[in-house]
Amino acid sequence: MASRWLRPFAAYLSSPLVWRFNRRGVARGAALGLFAAFAIPVAQTPFAALFAVAARANLPVAAATTFVTNPLTVPFVYYLAYIVGRTVLRLKSESVFAIAPDAGLFERTLNWVVTLAGPTYLGLLIFAVAGAAIGYLGVRIGWRIWVGQKWQRRRRQRAGSGPGRSVTECGG
Image (cartoon, rainbow, N blue to C red):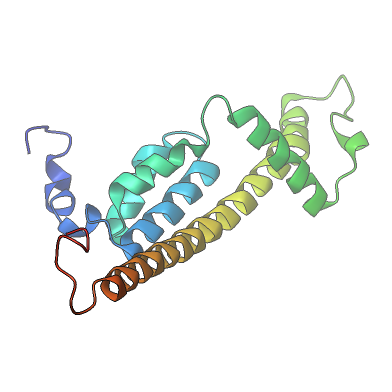
């Protein structure tokens, strides 16, 4: 490998398993990329790539699916994650920032974690697990439908090119 940063990972990155487009690898890559997109707040793409290499998933798909969270979608995702987390934890909206003005740094930090960061990250973890499951199943089902349609098309073409017809009549 030319890059000194990638040299320690050369054996893993040269494995054909992380570059092959098959249904298992792509489904794993989509699941890992979506999990990293929601569960990891920064550097999602490198983490998704590490996950993909470790799980022998498709690395390009894992890296690409992390872009479901991008600068345009993050405010909405984080707000929805906060709402979901707050609902799961059954926090009342009045409890947000309900702290005395003379509270110390520790109390303010703890209040912030309990009222904002905690519910938001819980919501993000829920999104990560649900997104990974939906991504995995979506790719597996979509791949199956695509392959089934290809087989049906082949059957129709073979049925149309019965005995007595020339190759040019069959479109070949």
